[in-house]
Amino acid sequence: MALKVGLCILIIVCITTGFCDAGKTSSYTRSSDTSSDMPADAFPSPKGSNAPEQVHITQGDRGGRGMIISWVTPNQRHPNVVRYWKANDPSDVYKAHSQIFSYRYYDYTSGYIHHATIKKLEYDTNYLYELGSGDAVRQFSFSTPPRPGPDVPYTFGIMGDLGQTYASNSTLGHYMSNPKGEAVLFVGDLSYADNFPNHDQRKWDTWGRFVEKSTAYQPWIWTAGNHDLDFAPEIGEYMPFKPYLHRIHVPYRQSGSTSPLWYSIKRGPAYIIVLSSFSAFTKYTPQNDWLEAEFKKVDRHETPWLIVMTHAPLYNSDNYHYMEGESMRVLFEPWFVKYKVDLVLSGHVHAYERSERISNIRYNITNGLCTPIKDQSAPVYLTVGDGGNIEGLANDFSDPQPFYSAYREASFGHGLLEINNRTHAYYTWHRNQDDEAVVADSTWFYNRFWYPKDETASF
Image (cartoon, rainbow, N blue to C red; front, side, top):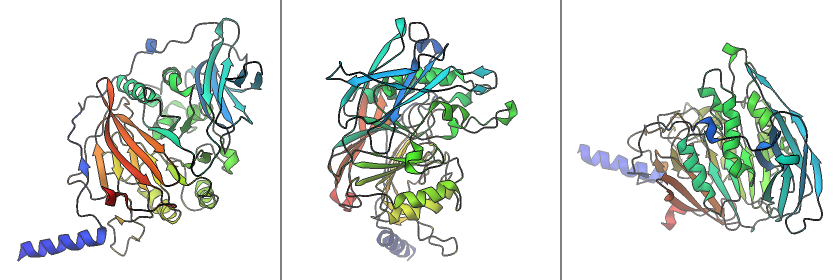
């Protein structure tokens, strides 16, 4: 009799939730040992007097015709000019001047941090740019995205919680070995300087040199994480995100934001909204008011793919950082479902996980409906805090695997999102393994606005 009752309950759960099979927990086992930081001499400054270093670029406007070029000069403020030209027309050279910043943190003084915004670039065009002077001239390149539109293909890399360890080097190297990636969606936690005594700011400099081989050539879309806070009142540092805000500039004002910690851009077929898990976001706060207004601006006929980035995951089946995104989920998940967000990207948990399309918006504390249910208007939640940082892996998954978890693995790696058109995108997650990246998880995503088909029904 008890067995029959149990089977009945199981059938009812399957019917009401839409899930009769749990997802997959990978059987691949990676060593749980932490990966150590590479030594500082692995990231030497470039040769030449006052050579520009730590070069990185990010989108400089809403639609993709602007680029922010950022770099550091270690000894002198000048030169503060970036020279740029179309790759196919080297005779027509333009110039842009940077704004120059520096900061003090405890016993550290930064170099001169430059941010120059290039405007009115042509879409879908290759450019070269040059920094420095004399014996320290350095040249780089980038490509602008296609004009925002519903059927322009575009491929994003996805990374988070990178740090500067030997495992981090593997992650970045594997991403760069794949020529498909055109821009990186980075979900926070950059240098991990705060893991060292007095938040050793030299780690910000070595990190900038480490990632330059990618960040100088393709834009990274930045999200701030908890390891980027550098809030340390015990050493007299009371300004949250001081190093991050001096080093990372984004076009937040163009989206009506009052803070560079939350903003939006359009890039090719995607509308990307960046949120801050560690800034105020409750009702009546600037971030909350901005996000409510922002969703109403999205035109899915122009940018069909709606992507949200935030550091702390809203759904997570690892006991590491479990439910730290719950407050944001309660507030923002109804909007994610209402406006049919396609994907929510997060880091924070040092593992990989992909969810089903589920929501928990019906739960109001008193009604007891506290179990997520299948919802075809809901996003897929991707946790990619697996960049390889010094703290190691989060390998304490809850057991049994929740039905809302489609795939999970405690390994380091990166993701690729290949948007084909307004209806289909192919997603792969690449595990770091030995000398090559292994496709460990892959799936098609169907656009929630144009083709809201159940992906699981196709497999």
